[in-house]
Amino acid sequence: MFKDIEKLTEFCHTGELEVYHSEYLKYCPKREHFSHKGMVAHAQLTALDHNANCGRKQAVIQSGPRAGEARCKVSFPKAQWVAKPIGEKKKSYAHVMVLMDTVTNACETGEVEIEPEAHHLPKNISGSAPPRKQELFHKHRTRFNR
Image 1 (cartoon, rainbow, N blue to C red):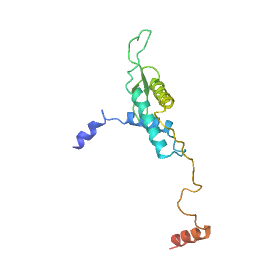
Image 2: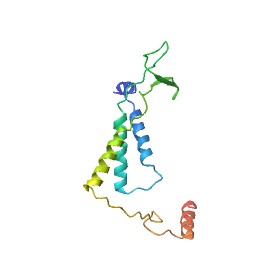
Image 3: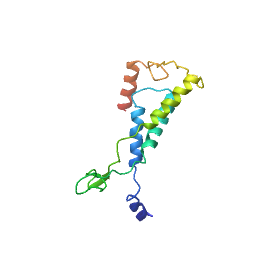
Image 4: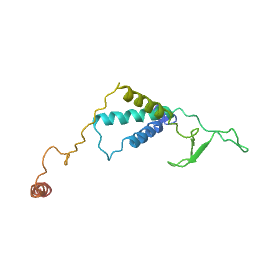
């Protein structure tokens, strides 16, 4: 069994998942607060963007003595040289135009009602008021002085 696990590293890679998580952070940064509906919408936008661009073919060299050869970038990430394929052209955002047309048509025909949500962010994310500093100091001091 352990010999099989060693061989998995040859073809099981998390690169595509890491790309998806990077795209997710572009649409839904950690430092901003979003409602549940906002989180769902951002996750859906991430999935649309990723799905529209994950099937790109590897680019080829256009001219010169190596014309027609697959393009790749050579790097040394973790103690060995690797050749990473370069995708065929830049990302496509054609799916965004389709989405915008759909939303615009739905708003114009009245098929969708847009309900604005109140953005009320609590001052303290804790559900209770903070304790006094003396209480915290005394609690920590007694714990460390045992």
